[in-house]
Image 1 (spheres, rainbow, N blue to C red):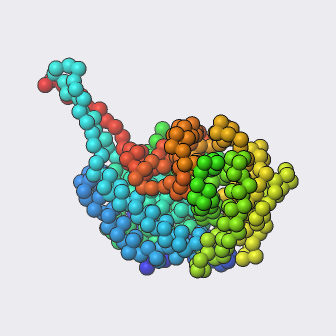
Image 2: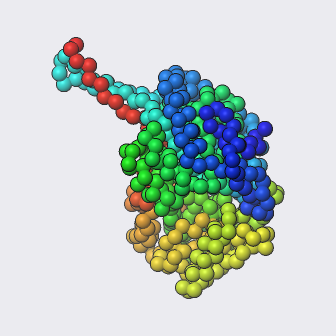
Image 3: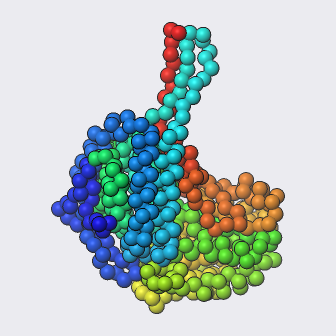
Length: 476
């Protein structure tokens, strides 16, 4: 029942006139065909959300909370099924997919609770005959455009706060992972989501659907996760209707490995941060900066760790590295590795396509990389770890911050003083110390500079879907 192959608009499953294929990146096999909808169907979804908004916004916070908890429970009850479907269409190892399902569910639970605490406040008056009150109200119809690399979590991270706040929603999932999105939609329907409150438009024409969402005056909020170039374009389109936007965009995450780190911890955690989902996450380590005195020891230990990783289809036991999502991704990784070699860098491990299939790339370590190389400037989005030497803390920070991006950064040190200094001086929205995983539903997720605007998760995530209203009561 979770293998849905239709879109969802106004409480009904919609087949559409045209369809597109969803493929398994590990084999190229077509898993299913889903509706290829366009601007007209997007307008219908917006209209449904607009019609449903007054009743949903008027529900008690605890009523919305209870529904989100039922959705959470339904998702966790079918976690293995959703994870298997996710692995089939995006390629990540099954263990990672299971972890993502739990991560997605955590946002539904967190915002089910947080939505009951959308508090206002009173302000001491400046005039004896007046009273000042500040309240918060749902912003209206929201639109969510989500990426393929976390097909369940990115929907839950946007839908959770939107629905908890009292907003209605139109979701455009990525064409590569529409099936996971539709499975979540099925579970939301089973949880009792009212007609029109959440709508899902599948498409291969992201530009047409995105433009319809941006141009609509009824859509008051747009949340996008994806590339910086597309995010800037969507933000520009949204300016015409002055809708609120939040953008979680590209990254170029550094990992700073200092000589006073625990080397074993640094090797293990950098590998986790670099190679999760085959390096295809926005917070993946993109550059490994290692202090001179431990550089060779780190490269040796890290390379041995990476060389032992198992590559293959995500449903095989023990696989740690799955396929890249498509041929374009393979072309980019191949180009960046070759450009680094041409510029004088040395491949220590890997550096070639893997025999497991056309979209598999060997987990790779490259040393002798410099900051000016393309592989240190562009977001790799593949299983390749470039290593750069640094002399001291000042140089490490200068190298780390020498990027237009500012999403996530990692640092490894056993010095509390250095940890504080480095965290304060890294120009990134998130910093993880001595740990390769930093994402959690209870804390704000987002970046600075070209990595975006706004935050998801934590109390800040709910704020993105609420307007603030000041009311002055006179004549008292």
